[in-house]
Length: 222
Image (tube, rainbow, N blue to C red; front, side, top):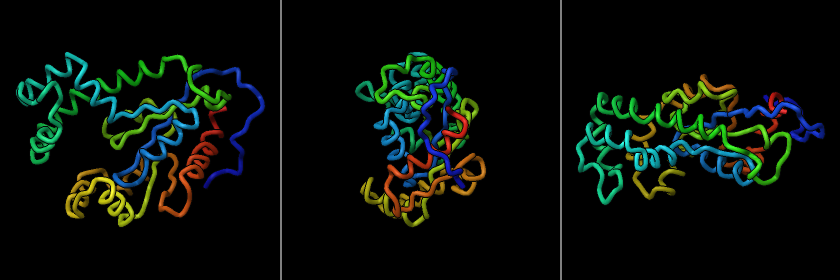
């Protein structure tokens, strides 16, 4: 439950230490939509999946290790063939573990560097936005990014809602969506690891879900 506390704080905090909040959730939960709205509200948001793709393309050390693991032809037209990688690791847990051991530490290092950046460039400055940042990751706990977070928040939704959202979004089959859900950490386990959970079952606007998150964060971030 959320304490009845407003996110508005009229006293300027003298502590400018950045606070990182982990934002996670299974496929179809709507965590990316929540992250996007938080970004529009002026909060820095690190999209770990997007940044991992950039790192696998731009980081020569990471790239060379991936080529050693899967072969130099895994990059097609200077882009990592993600579908081919997915096929290669889907039935080979050892290959997936090796890939993760390459990418996860690089993403963690990149996130640490991102946290050091100047936050004055972001809109709507306030005591909360100047200190609070978010990292969005479906594999927050598996990648150990939660170790860098002050608190972790899980976005949840009923299973059938998640399935239907993903079918509509990705134009794919129910069987494929269920297979992807089953390959992820179960939602119940994500909840047990998280400090706070918000349900996104479609009954309330995303902006209201964001306000619930910010009310929770205001208890320790101002």
